[in-house]
Length: 120
Image (cartoon, rainbow, N blue to C red; front, side, top):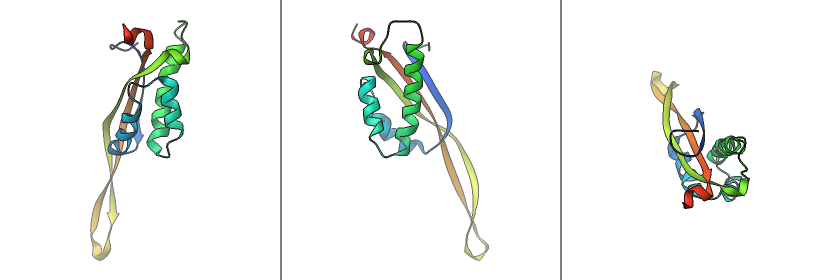
């Protein structure tokens, strides 16, 4: 378990801009686990697939702790999308010039908790 209560999972150095992934994460915060997966399954964004993997991993961590938990007893407590390093590439342009192309990365972390503990 993380320092915060709940079960966590994270994916680091994910190729994707944090500004494009954060709006997807905003849709599933504080939602039940099964409802959050349904939302992520029906979204066309790349960020939805990436967040879905991390949320499923956090739920698997919760379900494998030998507690009598079911998927319907879990909810998404927290999802964070943090900046990662940027890869810098040279993009050659006309007349011998060059531009800098930055490829952004992010770190995705999710915390899943029991619904009964959240209400208490």
